[in-house]
Length: 408
Image 1: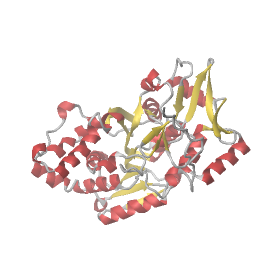
Image 2 (image 1 turned 180 degrees about the vertical axis):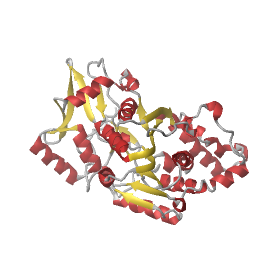
Image 3 (image 1 turned 90 degrees about the horizontal axis):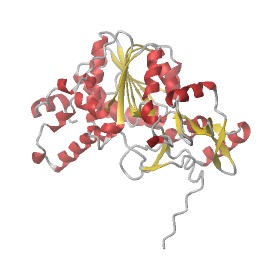
Image 4 (image 1 turned 90 degrees about the vertical axis):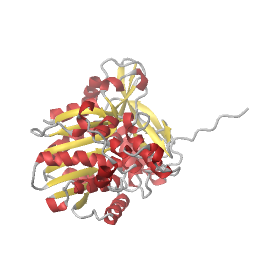
């Protein structure tokens, strides 16, 4: 009879320096909120997961996850069509598009190329800002853009530099899978009250229960979960709401396109998410052992789009969504990649078709990822990506598509 595998101890496989810093902080300050722990594990300037030199994005076994821009350049091309319309609606003069968390630079490259096909490049007063904290990834992005002749008009800022700036943005902000990686508090309903799940230390990192860190957290969780069930766990993304408020303060005129995992409050509060939505990712495997591999595994929680939309409206912005990524991309012309008959396509072409399908079919990212569009007052929200199906255009012919999409 086979015995069950021994589970690793909490903290096993972690970055040693980060584990020691965690221990010292807990001994000095007491148990950390999960948001504080997540900030340390993901964003520590030296040893955090998103500060590493290794690229975690890709389908190979030594990577942890893959994203839509890395799946196929069609994603960036389609999103570029929407950004082009947004920039056109804003009008002439100097305009800017901003991408948060550019990863390997695939989205920025495809998007920039599509904008140039629309006549919206540096020569027409369009500049780009890539908001990136990791110097290794910035070098990757720079190399990719340089290799495609797209470096002109691009600047880089760290998230801290972008947040601290008072310069008004006139243009379009893109955040693909950004909000889901921002730190969250974890709360649990036990014996008629909410407690906060914190990270303590008992020779190893452990989960402990403590009082909720502030009335503002309780107010937020009550709005999401008015009738909690015994043992129900939920995440509260206060950092995501702060991100929205800072975005609203910087965006003087224009749009923000947010693409992410997420649900409305009614779904987050449902029994199927009784243990919350927080997950760890390591080598394409999903785990709920959040205290393992500290600094070496990703941590992510589904975005509460109800809270995000409410925060944006409170800041005076208009909001639409969420709509599924599949619907959004189909409205922008995803079927253009299928003008050629599948029977006539080469094996390599069929693999590319499958990659594009993964972006919009429910079995891929089409249903799991959602899109929310925000706009400043006065900006029209009759955008192509939000159009109903009856207004979608027919796929382009092979000749039209090749002329407009190049090698994508």
